[in-house]
Image (cartoon, rainbow over all chains, first blue to last red):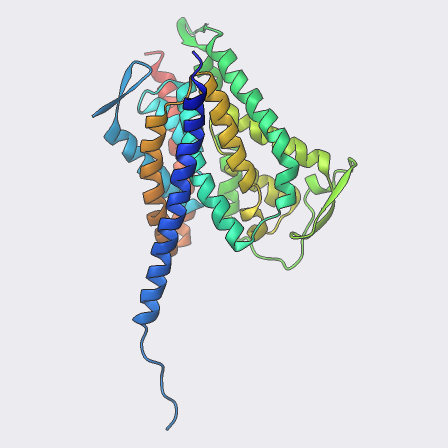
Length: 49
Length: 298
């Protein structure tokens, strides 16, 4: 039983597009986490006595 | 909620659960997880083996796409190696998919007075061998303290003198036989088409121990080939009617979300736990295959 060409193309394109979407979503999430970590860091120690 | 897979109902929740497990494994151990996914689809969820192989490859396209984009941004890996393996890996994938088709159409064999489909017998045997070989090598890598040497120690495959030769300046490694690299690609493609694995679990030991790649360069090499083998394998298997897109996407959604959790867990868990986890995972998959095989005789 062979499948139609549009179905075969969808089998390749749909997961690939999902991968691209995940790359951007998790990239954004990671940048946001890093940004928050920088915002919440403790103030630098002042050594100027 | 069930999916109709070749006339057999498969629970969507169980599929999503399996996807989550595979994603966790992929995130924690840096492998695609196909070596666990395809056997478990067949043994635990009862998906026919050829469809498990094809659909496993289809869901792998998503994770491979993310890996390619990420490694391209980081600039890791030796792309020349990928280009050399590209065409042979596609030929190998086609040969692997054709083998599955031929085995599926070959009927059954009599074993200990019971009838067993030839495709199940051969593929279960191949999975067991593959897990013993590649899985063992990967566990060995995890158990050894891999250090960046600062120089490249040529592995046995890099020493084979079969012209023409090619240099890999990013590794750096010079005068490596292009024929040997092409054959590695052919083997990788065949494994991918036959077993529905991305091949990362087999390529990693080949690069580290066979060619002597440093860990960082090995991690980024072969990613493009993994994407191409999973995509070409999907095309070949879909043409034969062995890809269920719905099943693949349920797995892909679960796996892509939990892979992030797996990557976070890796940073928090002790290395000893991770090393033991990988060994238990390989052993567990082997036991599942052995159990399902033995159950056919009860």
